[in-house]
Length: 415
Image (cartoon, rainbow, N blue to C red):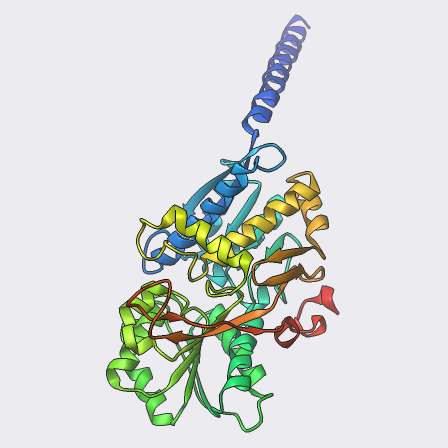
């Protein structure tokens, strides 16, 4: 009996000690959360490192500007970047680490639709908000949707529709060839091209091919394009894949124009030189948008990064779009009055925001940004990059021309 009471006493004492310890931890954890943490997973190594570096730079700069205005909810915004190596299993581990160890309030990425599809599951598991400011596979907000994710960029349908919208309105080309990367994003970019191609009278798809990410030798594909009689090559390629495609095509003497997603990139146009001139690119943002709001933004960016390398002097490629996505996220957090996922979701659904390229809204059923598109032709001379071809006059493609009706998204919430 004495032994029983002794053991019981030890158990009670242990429980009291454990309770005291845990209670003591609460204020320390609360103190540790005097900051709002944005966890970023990007390819910070490997063939797409440059793309990941620029996205991370844009998130950091946007957070810096938020902090200069007092932060969010009276707290400093901290950005923690992790290398996902463009591999879903690694991105999953890094996203989990950001949430559990770094106490990230929101996790995000801009590179690789397969990475978003992995990270949004992590966000759902731990009930955090996941933001993509650059991954575009339609399935992310469609058949694979979960309510913890939000997309602040074009999806593949919108992006392909913006490219095709330019060709339909401003050219007479009729023979098109699709050449995209062979993974979820590339395949769904091609699906978007084909949907819009079917609405252009007389348009013909004369070829369709898919290649591995990070391909070094595009010559076999270029030969097939040239043999097909194509006038336009439609591609969602980015980074080195877009650069190698254009350089190889130029070297082999092809006469086609590409309609592409990501040629608003001075690093690529500097490398490709005259072989980039005349090609058509589209996105939701380019730095040549001619209005006071955008001019002020571009000048503010330049004043900070003017002494950096060419990829950072201006908010080129996807950096401008990424910057404004973070600004919108900050606005939503302030309006929600919390970083709680449920409150952010409720606040962001149906919300609007004024971007330098126009008014955007967050469609409630699928968490897709509804926005105008912007197309531009690469010119031989640029006011921003002397001696380097770059995007010229922007052509605004109205939101209604590129928006997929809710019932056609594949998202059961949108029926």
